[in-house]
Amino acid sequence: MPYYLFLLASTLLMASGFVVSKMFLNDGIHPLSLVASRFTLAGIAAVLWLTIRGHLVVPKTIRDLLGVITVGTLQTAVLFGTGFFAMTHLSAATLSLMTLTMPIWVTVLQGFLDRQMPRRGQVAALAMGMAGVTLIVGSGVGSAGSSQLLWYGLAILGAISWASATMVTKRAGLGVTGWSLNGWQMLIGGLEIQLLIVFLDIPMIELVGGADFMLFFWLVIPASIVSFGLWFAALQLGGASVTSGYLFLIPLFTAIMSVPVLDASFTLTQMMGGVAVAMAVWLMSRSASG
Image 1: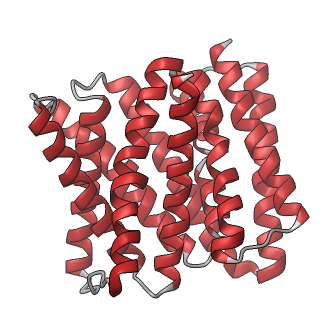
Image 2 (image 1 turned 180 degrees about the horizontal axis):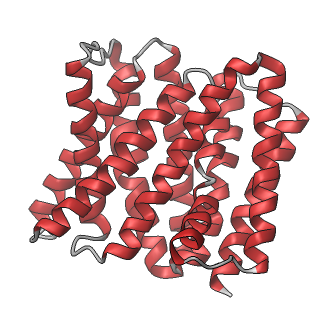
């Protein structure tokens, strides 16, 4: 029972992060400012909390340090930097769905690095996932023009970046894992984007009124630190292969919350594409665990 409670809570909180971020972007907050402030503060809070509890693991070798920096760059700076830019033109549900194609790209990268063809089940899942992505992108381009291709491309780039970070974590054998790795990678990625916005002279995030502060608090603590913490707990209980199959819950919950909060609507083609991607992720996890 705790396993499914952790899964439900973590995916709901992650989905809420997409919705709240879209609300800030709709209010004119620059996407890079939002990424920098959210993850720098989340990283600081996570590192301080782990330090107080005596559970913080610090990279002890240059190799571990470079590995953690690489994961932070790929999994926070690139993933959310490109994603939030894309979300200025895409819906929160569409971005979350494109981002959650990550397991598909992990299979592609793993096959390439190992010089080994994926299993039949993985090939079927890949074909279904690509078909779903094609339906989603085709529907968006058909309704808004070819200019939308850039934003879908950025979303897919973010998913590939996350997949690359996952491969680094799996293969590098880092001495920093779990909560500590999550805290460091959020802090590193946030600081990298912070340096970028200073260099580009992008204005910092400005919060106006109690509602903005409450939403930003939600984005930093429950939707970032707590959601990933519960996800790590679910991974430990259920294993990575099985648990990753439930990633499809995030775009589902994002879509459900987007309707009343963001007044979102979805075409039949988009919904069909979303179902295909969700099934592909689920099949991929089953194939990996089989």
